[in-house]
Image (cartoon, rainbow, N blue to C red; front, side, top):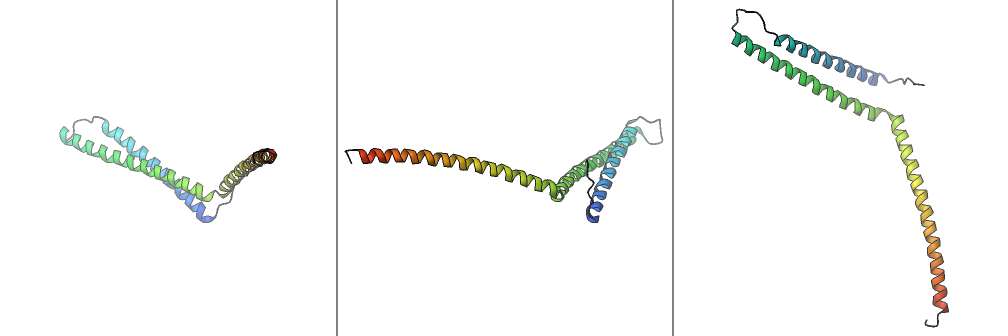
Length: 140
């Protein structure tokens, strides 16, 4: 019984941009990780000395690792944006939460009212007994 909601054009565009960001960031992580693995292989002798090649590979791995971190941070920002979008735009859920809280508070209010009425009745009985004792006492 899943009900498909029709979103306004701006919300639909925003969701599409979130989807694009997700795909781009994941692709960036995969591509950079693949390139780091490729760089880790030992190559045959080339015209470049081993020390120079090692430094170049080290630099490339650092840059690619930084790109992976950047993409990860972008994904965390995307999660934050999605949470904010859900909180701000899911009015039926917010209304349901408000209604549930109202029901809880009304129930609590009824319980408090019942306890207060019972307490009032007990105090009234005790006060009546005390008045009877006071007025019937010979030490007034």
